[in-house]
Image (cartoon, one colour):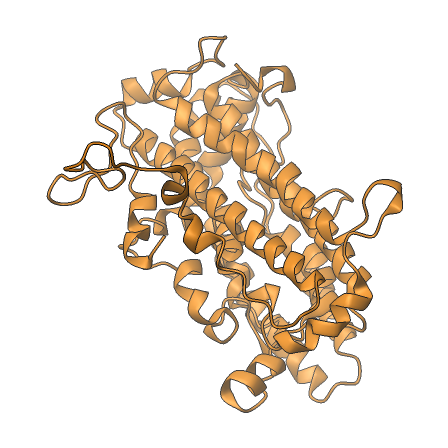
Amino acid sequence: MPDELNVYWWDFALDTSDARLTDRDGTPIVNPPDADERLGLDYSAYLGLDLLLNAQVPSSRVPDERVFIIIHQLFELVFKQMTFDLAVVARTFQALGAMGEATFRETTREGLPDERGPSAFWRPGMTAAARLRHSARVVLPAVMSLVGRGADDDVLFSTLEYQRFRDFLVPASGFQTAQLRLIQRALGKGPLFGVPVFPGDAYGANYTGSPCGHVSLGDPLVLRSGHARAFPDADHPAHEVADLDNLAHAVLARLAPEADDLSAPPSVRRILGDDLDRTTARVRSTLGDAPNADATAATFRRDLAAAAKAENQRRDGFAQARRGAHAVQTRFARTCLAFVLDRIAATDAAMHAPDPESFLTVHRKAVRRHVAGEGGTGGGGMPYLVTSQRFLLPLFPALVAYADLGVGGTAETADRW
């Protein structure tokens, strides 16, 4: 879709009024009336196949580079769908927050649907949340499997063939995926994108002409032209994606009175000094005897401490949201609201947790299998991946006032209607 039309991707409504997208003159964007009624939309035009199927330009004659390109483009298509689904959920939370008290009470207590399905209000958010979890649990790892092994231990992507074209791609890197960064911001990871944990020398040397030491993953030097997608302007519809975590906590805070006669839940977990020390020690160990290693680690700790301080201040304001979360999980576990919250938390875990089946674990194993040495084309490589997944990402979970209570949750048998 051309850039000037991409705005229509984000133009959606949660109500049941006229659904058709039109331009400012009222003409339908897709399949407008034609003077010759025999002419109209076809499959290829609707899907933009001319653009899509011509968007693969390899750097070499190595056959495996074609699957390498397709895999990463598949990731980006899945990420685009996930960002859209996050926007649907975010707008659902926004709509809840704008409701009067009586409507809010009724809507947040709506029970899980029977075979007739959920109400018109909950239907978009529930299907979007379910898709998010499915994308993280199933689709992304399945795409990653194309660089692994198949049935009977068949090699699906050759490391030896990869080495033949890898150097032609420097300094491009998977770390430059802006859509994934936007998803991670929606899932509470935003504070990490200002911490200089990522080795940026390859980017500095290739993009500016001089090495630049460690940078953050949110740095424009890394994200390049994708920076605006990861950090959309306040007037861009995708901006609300990054605010999903706060919107969910605001809804939970309105439910706090429902916990008035319940025992007090444990406080929201804060990021402690031991967490900072442990993570900094890990970063320092990966630097080894590199020049300025001590100074780099000290800068990292200072900036991580600042991010943790701001995050702790945010969490200190979640006392009411924590009580609301306790009420949801204790009294309203089989509601549409709990369904959505559970799947957002599960999406975060399926993408980022250090368990064997998460997307980042599958991705990390694939990188280790195919990339010789420690760095990828962009110079980050395994040390950053391990440090991020085991030490940094766990400090910033999605729905921090909700996800770790574990009192209730919607049953797996209620996942479909």
